[in-house]
Image (cartoon, rainbow, N blue to C red; front, side):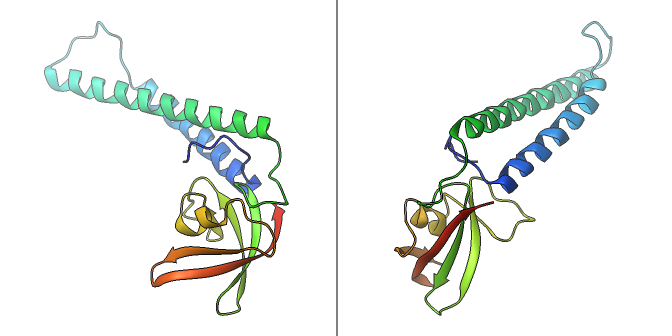
Length: 154
């Protein structure tokens, strides 16, 4: 996740909300296995208890991070449609003439094949551009060019 506090796409918001719900379930399950501080046990039991407590702390940190990101994006309002930014849906024309529509997001999702993260070479090159602008970026096979055809939101 980037540190940007701007808008996020609807799909990005849904993904964060799903992750948040999953983290709450995971936290509840792990916290339920934690015993009292006065329970006797050997060193292995104590190490296991410490590991679970550390896991709860990690989950709590991620929950807090997601909540802040969702609050910041709500304050930022909807993504702009005149300039490419996080949350934009952008139709692009590539050098070979093909056109593809992508979403600019701040976190990669394995299930979303149209998402381009803002910190990827293509995403970073597109930020701030307008329809009709050409952007240059580093692709695996060298320098590439793409033209912004249109900008919308999801």
